[in-house]
Image (cartoon, rainbow, N blue to C red; front, side, top):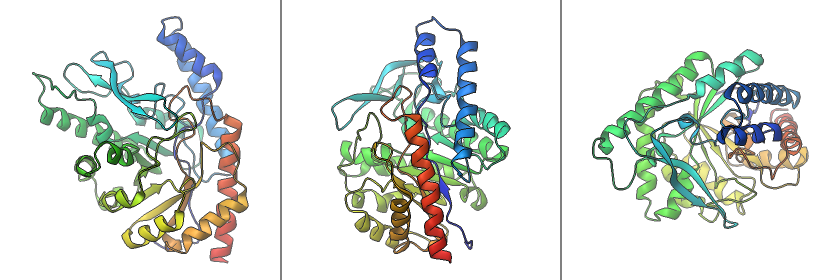
Length: 359
């Protein structure tokens, strides 16, 4: 890897406009048509892409405006063989969220695929477009603990991998600049199973999917890890990175997006990353905290990038947000205005660091 720039990328969601959130709630109650909902979501997507362009960001995304439920289960929106009483996760402020529903009958099939969102983004921006996708490990949690008599677990997991691989391949083939696999459940898994067995099973499943891609494809695929982000709280920030990162780096991707801005001991974590990275890796360090209402200054972002460069070769370094700004569609704790200001600071601060590091 040789270049004279430090790439900077958005992780995922941008807070949805109130109009879109209200329209989706009415749609769920049967009081709003799908056509009207889609029109509002289209307008929100175009507005989001243009606002990201105005921040100076070198790449854009749709801000997950049309992931009507959340970042994890968008592919099941409208499915008639799932129940909403699925996997619930407790956050640090005491509230819970259901990441993924519960499968009640075979087969597992995507109702929506991320390349549908990519198609629209590519039409409305000339900049490189990044696309986030849910992970096969997250989708594996759909399967009920008691099993399904006519649908063995192995067959279900085969279907999960098939759908996931097809989604990622379509995104790459259609021209996605990067495809990011969201893996918030990685750090969380160590809270559920401190032995690390669940984490290892998750990563084995992700690698089964990645085995279908060649080296060139893998250079455009990344994995994102964070301690969660919802209603200004996290689900696993109390889990030390030292228990996650050595196993995380066994994932066969070219890009790692690692939440860092909100970490208490970033230098300790950066020192660990230094020992784990391989020459073909690009490490995107989180320099903006989406759940902190304070807007980072470009100078603070610059300093965070420069600190990361003490441990990560600059030609392998990138910057990002710690997480999406609104992974669940109804989260209004962070405004769109604040989100875009934070992104602008990330872009400007990264450029400032780049000038220092490259002259």
